Every structure is written in structure tokens, then in C-alpha cells.
Length: 135
Image (cartoon, one colour):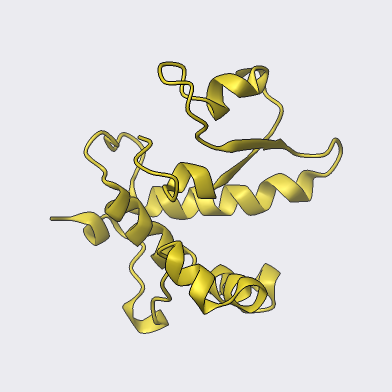
């Protein structure tokens, strides 16, 4: 699922829980066929359970849109970007009622966000349901 340098895999950092599936990070970070870099794998610090919970919340939101058993084979980069723009526009208590998008823009600016394909979705337009990706 690696389309270009600005793809989801190059922007998302996997915050793993140090399970056995993550014992060989290079098999995840590098495409085994092409040798092309895909993403970074970061590990939670030992005894820091709060680190994983923030990542898990995003996984929960993804599952609202792509329920367990959904096929990912037909997802395009545009589908993934649309889904993540909706998820990242949702305000979070952990961010003082700001959305991840707004926190990103405050740190890096709107121009950088636009170059990465990040867009703010107004709260009234947010959709965290499978209908978001229905074509």
C-alpha cells in the first residue's frame, strides 16, 4: 500500500507495544520487495502505558469507519487521507479540546499541513462511519 513519499505510511509513525510481531522492525519499515523505506516504527517506553492508549484511540476511530472484517485491498491513498482528515479533525480531551489537526497546524503551519494533504473537517461535517468511504 505504498504509493508515494507523502503516503500515509511515510507520515504515520507506528507506536508499537513491543509484541513479538515487532521484533524485526526493518521488515515493517522497508518494503521487502523493493527495499524502499515505508515508515518508522517507534516503541513505547517500558512502564509507560499512557503512550499506547493515545495510539489505540486512533485505531478505534479507524474501526468506526472500517469495521473489523473490512477489506483494505480497494482503499486508495485518497480514501485513507479522507478518513484520517476526519479522524484528526475531532477534538480530543487529551489535547485540551483541540483537534490533532489544529495542534499540527499550530506547530508546523497551514502550508506544511496542505503539502501533506491535511485538511480540517468542520465538526458538523465529521463522519466516523463506514458511509464516509462509500462510493
